[in-house]
Image (tube, rainbow, N blue to C red; front, side, top):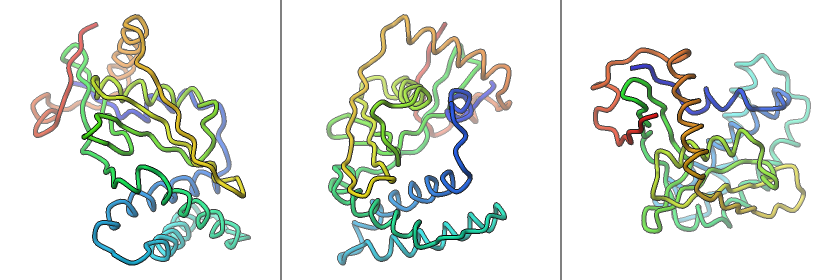
Length: 219
């Protein structure tokens, strides 16, 4: 079968490239808060200092790898500090919702899409996709991401969490994404199938589903 990752499909819907600094910033913030959720169960003291130290190391490493000279590191540290404290007030952090192993959406038995939302609440059958920018309104590629994740988690509620990093006083945004119609779902499945068959990587079907939760569809 031929497989793709969700981001490989959704990146075609991104309407803006953004600066390299902002892309690195977003990546590092995502990595840091995922680690905060994990370590909060083991570290009893305030985790903020550990998180900001991790951010600084990762940000400098990413900048160096991309041959990017950072002129105002204090700006990015202050941005990360506000973001970290806002995230600590979220339901994700307070309830320690974790990231699950990647699931696989199988289409017609010969195309697959790997799907992995940011955080999962199994007790309430809900998944969350988090962004470090405003999601009111949510960009098309983010909606596409969530629509794909809904295929992997067909019986889960879905939310986009926005933590706008560019605001001086950050307020967490929580946007519900309702389940799509059958017509919209079929259209997305056909589009994913065609994209995977044209651009995907070949992998043995048994290897693709081995020890992995998968959901099958036909179009």
